[in-house]
Length: 293
Ligand code: HEM
Image (cartoon, rainbow, N blue to C red):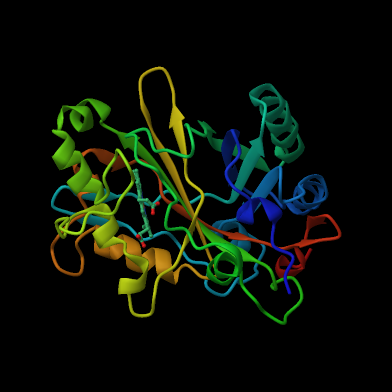
């Protein structure tokens, strides 16, 4: 079947940069998007198009919608839409920085940088709390089925949707919790990554157990830790063949179903939230036929 952007299905790289762009007012970004499509291979640079950009081009991508905003007791889920998303992936931070500069310059006539986050792989793929992240990701064909759309129409087969959320961890708070309480917040034992049979309903993996949703809500998570001089956390990134599984997961995490909020919310807060559509690749370049390019 498909020609998904290869960076979606590949394991997370040692280093990454997440760039988000806003559309400059009055800009017609056709030339810039064509240049980006030719320069990005979908592996070293995964590209996502936001609903705002599709709207500005007067194109509709079915299933692409604004990120939901939830607000409840102790639960804030902000929505911070952007026009364009580039996930720069690689082995070398210096090389990523230089590629980032080239993309920013290429897009500058029509887009301005709205956000830039440097991220990294920690250990064997741990969150900064020390818990392994990605254990229950679907693998092989199941990963493709969860993350990649199969669609007969040109420019849509092999595409994907992505939810991106920057989280800031309160590591002081988390580290102050006794080990048992930390394990109960995640629902796994830190020392051996075993799932806890008796975890409370608020445990993160109880909230998000993918088979427990109707329909089942499988996601391909490709999150990476980030840090600057004063703060640290996770850039949560989840690919889906639609945005429905993520929507269902987030709703339950926020307690919108049963009033029980995810224990993650007690030590981590969200500062951004956006959805993008990731076009397929064709002949080594990003295929933008679905948005008329
Ligand atoms: C600070 C943010 C987050 C952290 C630190 C985090 C961490 C983790 C950890 C440690 C696991 C257990 C191992 C694994 O299966 O990967 C996990 C599982 C999972 N997380 Fe998160 N997560 C975060 C946010 C989210 C969000 C926002 C969602 C979706 C809306 C989500 C969805 C899932 C899913 C689907 C699983 C697998 C559940 C299962 O089927 O067992 N996570 N997460």
